[in-house]
Amino acid sequence: MSSVTKRSVLAIAIVIAVLVIDQIIKFEVKTHFQLYESYHITDWFQLVFTENRGMAFGMQFVGTMFLALFRVVAIGFFCVVLGRLVQRKAPYGLIVCVAMVIAGAAGNIVDNLCYGLIFTESTPWGEPAQLVAWGQGYGSFLSGRVVDMFYFPLFTWPEWMPWVGGDVFFGAIFNFADASISCGAVALALFYYKYISVFRLR
Image (cartoon, rainbow, N blue to C red):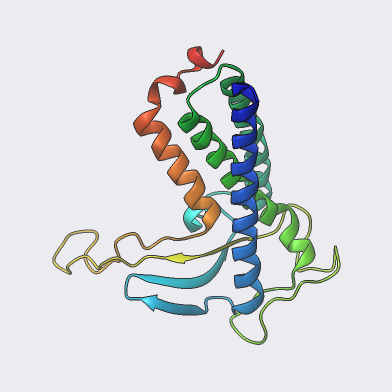
């Protein structure tokens, strides 16, 4: 097996693995939790089921359809970058990082594209959402809401501190796909910043 083929197989395996793990977690939470229901694991780690229409970590800056289209374009761009890196036999770690970013973005776009079509509405009351026939869900194509569940309330800032006093440090609720994007992007910035240059990817 050539080095290019090895890098290609590695990239594909990472994307598939992240997608499968992400969707299994989301399916289990979506079909077993009421909206905003939480499960206490430790004082610093909880599962809290939320949904969002916006950016990663529950941010709500833009509409669902615009965000989904933006993600499609971003995935296409990073796939081109990944293909060039594979052909140029870039370091395996770099291949892993870019594949993680692509997989995370793809994981969330699955929610945007399909969840409105295949799930009933999640509510804070009644039964958890149910899987239904295609097109019988709570929304339309590109209107699905992203499922989030991981919450790490590591500590609360002292009340006397300005602006953040009383707030939870890192109060965002996120999913496995968000974590994949973040870990891949941070590792790129820390260890492979020289390869980020557009001139090096031509």
